[in-house]
Each structure stands twice: as structure tokens, then as C-alpha cells.
Amino acid sequence: MSAPAPEMIHVWVLEDHQIFAKHVRRLLDRQTDIDCPYHFSHPDELFEKLKFTTEKPDVLLLDLGLPGRDGLQVLDEVRKVLPNLKVIILSAFDDKERVYHAICNGASGYLLKTAAPDEILDGIRQVMDGSSALSGSIAKMILEGFSRYGNVQKIEPLTTREEEVLRALVHGLIKKEIADKLNISQHTVDMHLRSVYRKLQVRTQTEAVSKALRQGLV
Image (cartoon, rainbow, N blue to C red):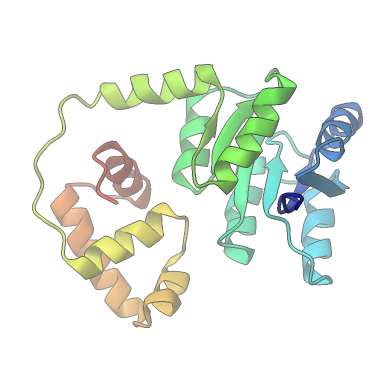
């Protein structure tokens, strides 16, 4: 009896460089477990497609240097529309600010356009398995950035509900989505977030997410 065919991974690409996008689509469509039915050159095209179709991608390969809208803004917006979507940044930019913003705001991976074809394919499969996809230099940058914070500090234990709110925050959900997911009011979400910020000794969502990831809190 033959083995069952692997479940297909549907990948959409948002990339304004036509030649690069063509190479990526050709690479993906040669795989038996990955297909790439759509490529968009402008963010508006992507959101228009999502508005009028029931089709949804499993993975979005997202460039950061896009016309009309910064790729990091697109990341925030698409995560609101599809909170469970796996987004892999595929960019020529490797500056720390963009990398940290992308990872802290829900990107499942960050690959450079200089990545080998197998690295891109492995990255897609890894994020579908629940792992992260990072180019070697990006992973090194993140580890070095975290190491500057020194030893992990002991913090006041979080309650079960506070952990749930923090975990949702790490996954990129906004307050309304957290409230809906946990079946609580946004006011209650705010109350839990204030307590989380106090216990983690942070002042912003980005700081909370960064510290949670560094200390393995969720």
C-alpha cells in the first residue's frame, strides 16, 4: 500500500521585485508538498484578495520593502485579519530594529533574500511544524541582542490567566482578539496586562513580549 501524499502547504508571496518573486514561485511549485497559487506585488492586492475569497494561505512570504506600505505595517495588519497565519519575512533588510519588530510582532521567521533555496523550503516546513525559521546571521543577531540583558532575573509568578494573556500577546493578538479568545472583557484584559507589566518590570507590549521570549515564560 502506497504512503499517503503529504498535506499540501499553501504559500502566498507578497514581493514587488518581479524577477525574484518569479524565482521563488518556481522553487515552491517544484515541491510535492508546497504550492504557491498567488503572488502579489502590492499590499492592497493581498488584502483585496483576502476580502473576496475563502482561500487562505498557510504561510505568507513577506518582503519588507513594499510600495505604498511598510512591510512591518503589513505584518501587523495581516496578523489582525489572520491571527493564525505563519508569516516569514523574506527581505534584504537585516537591521536590528526591523528584525526585532518583526519577531516581537508575530513573524514566524526571518530569512534573508540571500538564503539558499533549501533554506527557504526548510523554513516553510519548519514554521508549519511549529518551529521558527531564521537565517544564520539573523539568529546570531537575536541571541547577541538577548545576551546584552544579562542573567535572567527572577520575577513574581504570573497567574494562569496572566500567562494566557501574555501568551496571546506573544502570538501577536491585539486586546480585542485576546478578549474574544479568553471570553473576557477588554477592561479585564487591560487589568491583566497591567499586572503582567508590573511583574515583568516592563512598560510596553514589545518589552513584555521580548522578556517573555528571553525568559521562556510562555
